[in-house]
Image (cartoon, rainbow, N blue to C red; front, side):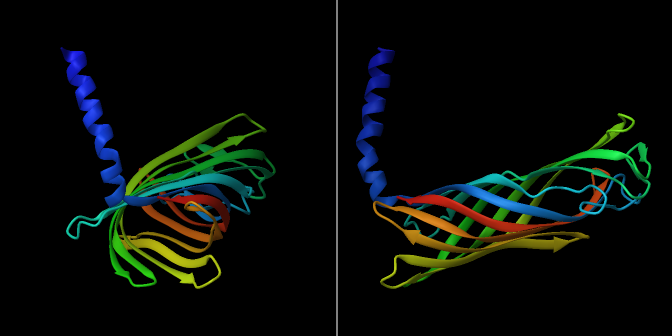
Length: 251
C-alpha cells in the first residue's frame, strides 16, 4: 500500500513539472574568481596589526563561485538567490619585524607560512522593481562568513590560529542592461552595510554574452571589503579584488 501511495505521489509531482516550469524561472552560474587580498588582521583585538602583504606575503589565488536564482510571477513574494564564494589564500615569506599573533611571538627574520579563509554563503530575497528592457532588482542579503587565519613559523614550528564567524544583513541591488543586436548584457550588482565598526561590501561589474538555449558566458571585475571589529576576539580590515570568468544558464 505504501509503495502505491509513493508511486502516486511521485506521478503527481512529475505531472506538475511542466506547469512549474511555466511560472518559475531563474539562473545557475558557476565560475572562477582570481582575487588578491590586502589589508591587516589583529588577533587578539588590540594587539599587533599584521599586514597581509608586507608581513605574510599572501599570494593571489583563483577560487570557485556559484549562484542560483529562482524567480516567479507572484508580486508579494520575493525572489530568491543563493550564492557561495570560496575565498582562500596562503603565502610563505620571511618577516622583517617582530609581532604577536594569538599566544605566539614571531621574530624578525623568521620564515612563516600563512593560510587564510573568508568563505561566504549568501541568502538574498529580492524584488524585480523594473523589467522594461533593463532589470533593476532590490532586496536584502544575509551573508555568513566562515573565516580563519593561521600563521606558523617554519623556523620554530610554533603557530596559532584565529577562527571567526559572522552573519551580516546587507542591502542588495542589481542592474542589468542588454545591448541590442549584440547578444551582450552589462550589469552592476552590489551588497553592503556598515555599523558598529563593521563594514562589508561586495561589488561586481559584469559583461555577459548570451549563446543558445539559455547558455551564456560572463566575466568582469569584483571587489570586496571585509572590516570586522572584535568578532571572536579578531579584528581585520581586508580588501579583496580581481577578475572573474564563468558560465551561466537561464531557465
